[in-house]
Amino acid sequence: MSQRKRSKGLGSSQLTGGEDDFIPTQVERRSQDQVNQKVSELVQFLLVKDQKKIPIKRADMLKNIIREYRDAYSEIVKRADRTLQAVFGLQLVEIDTKRHIYILINNLPRPEGQHLCRDKEKEKMGLLLVILSFIFMKGNSVKDSALWEFLHLLRVYPGKQHSVFGDVRKLVTEEFVRQKYLETTAIPLTDPPEFKYQWGPRAEKETSKKDVLNFVAKMQSKDPTFWASQYSEAEANKATT
Amino acid sequence: ENREAMLNSKSNRLTEALEEANRLFDGVCRAREAALDAQFLVIASNIGKEKANELHSEMSAFDSTAFAEDLLTFMGINRTEVEETDDSEDVPGAFLPSDAWRTMGEEASKYFRRAPTFHYMMGSFKSEPPAPKQRIERQKKAGRGKAEQAMPAQLKKMEESHQEATEKEVERILRILQTHFENDPNTPISFFDFVMDPNSFARTVENVFHVSFLIRDGLAKIKLDEDELPIIEPIKPSEGGEEDSRAGVRNQVVISLDQREWK
Image (cartoon, rainbow over all chains, first blue to last red; front, top):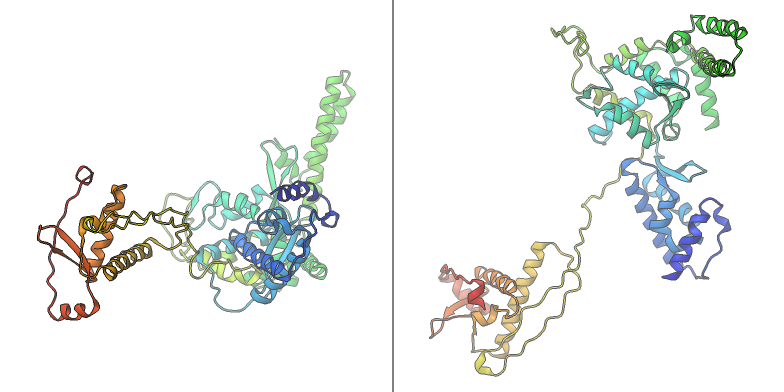
């Protein structure tokens, strides 16, 4: 019991530092079986946590699964990622290296044909793609007023309950932001306060500027090179990711 | 308040404001006025920064209106149908089908490397909190000597669903009945002795409930003895065969038992 407490105490200070600073409070022979068990538990934990698409914090992983196996943390995480890739075709990606926040993304090439996710999810992805395209084509950052003005054209209004999306304002400003698809920052010195929207880290990982440009080009029946600066930015972006 | 007007790339209003501020500053002789001027400068520079940003973000001219129109087309908008509504904000003269966004979503999923949400195929395992259950007490017939009260071992954990629990109980009661009969083949047990739990009325009711299953399934039978009191005995498998051929006599009996009687 006391040992648990000790590692907890060390834990809160360790989160800011590197995990290599950790001094094991007990010399324990970690049997392969025990570690394997933890890896499986972590895989399950990640899969379930991913259901709502809210990014997973390292602190939660440590508290709920790793617990006293902290010294084996990086090994467990690495193996869990390998399992996710080999068994499920998913990948564990760190989207915030400072605060250690992770998401799961799909590793497999996108298949053509019907996707099996539920309608509600599909519809939201549709709206999201439209928003991301707008943001990118407009220079990677748009004011909220500009975004809503654009969505007006698509019969989506922030003040009005939408037949498909319900409270759209909440969906865009809260859900998409919490899932890290969008990032919103306040514009300084504005009264009433205005916000600007950009791509969030999840969007950066799950799609690319090139893909989004291709989408726009497809919708408008034009070649992606039609928009020269966006095209070159997309190409440059592809090279770095 | 004129922010929007100032930001308009076609206007020179920001420059004009700056020039006016410059002129006004010459007349400044109080610290407060100078502070106001400084405040103005901060706001002006922010607007200036935004203007610069917007210059950059013109990018290759992107016509968002045309884009929106193309999106609507893709979603299956019907432009020929003109709706007669006075709610001009709502349906500006074209009909968007209900699966519009689903169509869009179908296309969108091709552009995302989104991990499919994980769900257990068989549903999750439901665990119930440990419920201490008292087994029914064994009571030999009064004539056979002192009745021994066997305090049941407490069940530490109940992990099955309620339905299975009932079946288990029923099975257990049957086994107790049969065991008793093995030991004492020719003495049927008084029904009331069998089901009564002297310490718990609720438990007694439960026992009656479980015994009724045994009767229904033809695993036990209740007869009236010489004193017109009900007795219960298990049906031997061989007997059971005969019973079936005879389309066993079944009767419905209603026994009422309230707490006072039980006491």
